[in-house]
Image (cartoon, rainbow, N blue to C red; front, side, top):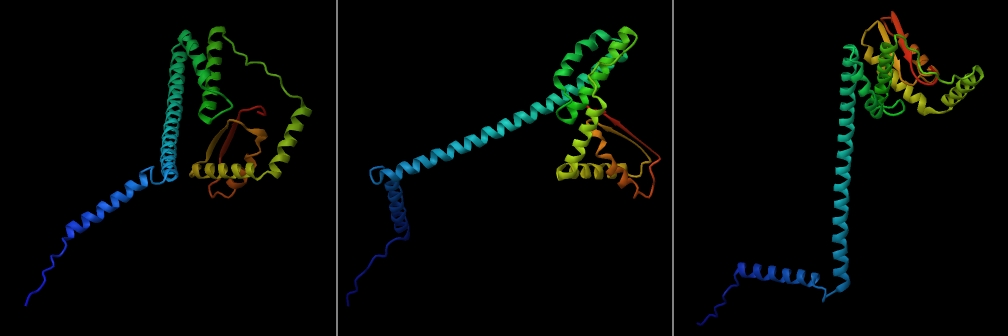
Length: 227
């Protein structure tokens, strides 16, 4: 009895053929002769993704540069302040005078807290230099507000503080942080860089009453237009 012999197809050859078909199909998809609009859309999508990736990388680089510049400027300001203070302490007034303009460029009383602190320290160092040279020091003359003007500003700030929750929330958060930072201390000295008629501090006084250990001494030094 004759039996027909059927040679089974090799699985390797079968998978190779299927892979070849898939590659041919992918090639047909990328081939503009098959569907030009689809190829153009696919190419445009790739270009758009590359542009987005490049923009994200550029934004990350710019953010890193800004952070590094801010940190370097803060460290530079701190170094100049310490150097200027050492010059004033050693009565080296010429070098201290040369450092003050650069300190003024890096600091401002109207921006972040470190720069504001730097501006006030720079003003104090300048006063020390002037007093050392002349033997006396008088602060810069500023146009003071009249009593009626001060009262109007105070009333406006009180009205704004009563209707705006943002200021109340910021004062409450700051007072809680100060309360936690005391940690059992009985002598407190607070430096307010923009005292704003002192609207923040009644809330802190109310919180301090609840302490088991009472405050023996409390001092607030205020800066700003209303100080």
